[in-house]
Image 1 (tube, helix red, strand yellow):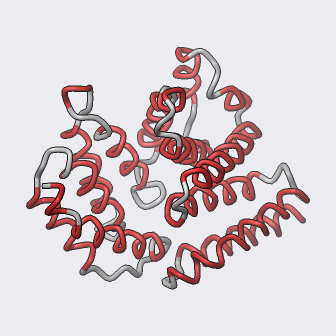
Image 2 (cartoon, helix red, strand yellow):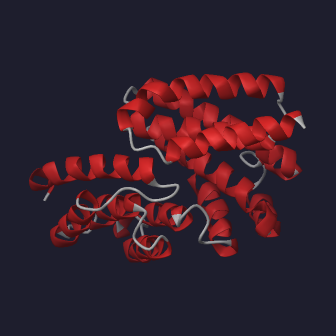
Length: 263
């Protein structure tokens, strides 16, 4: 009963945050919520709902609001540790996801089914955030293939999960490198377009990352500006997406402001 109550509390507070349109209020208030989650986890350390919520909020806060690289790494590392703890409770093999031989890892990922989607997405998204926060560390970059494999399995099982963010991650993975270095920008474009389609255009971050990761990579200024103008002029309010959409609009304005220098 206690686990259920604390899990419901975490879900309710998380929902309130993602649907909040006061960006500065969330920026200032979210650390208190993160501390609250820490306290709840101390009292209920095996609650997978709490662990997933804490992983998601730590990772999202680091990516959206934290500028200092050292603090980004700290929070992203915490998010990954929490996500892996939760995954390990659901799937024993997840305990060694980062260290088991790669062939064994791929074989395990293929055994996951629809019921594992929330766990797998939580782990893959936190893992991706950790790699991004440690992008100057080649040992971290070396784990990217594992993340892509896991998120790819989530996409196979339920591509609509989290308002198309599954496809959004795949789009970013395909556009990390130019074609000459192994990147697959056109496959990435398809993933971004699918993410936009899944959310009926309401996931504005999909358009921002489409512009930043694909249009800039292939030097398509027209597409870049079109996507970002659509984001800036859109209504950000959408269930489960409001706060992320307001962050997306902030990022879109910054990308438009720097476009002349880039192109």
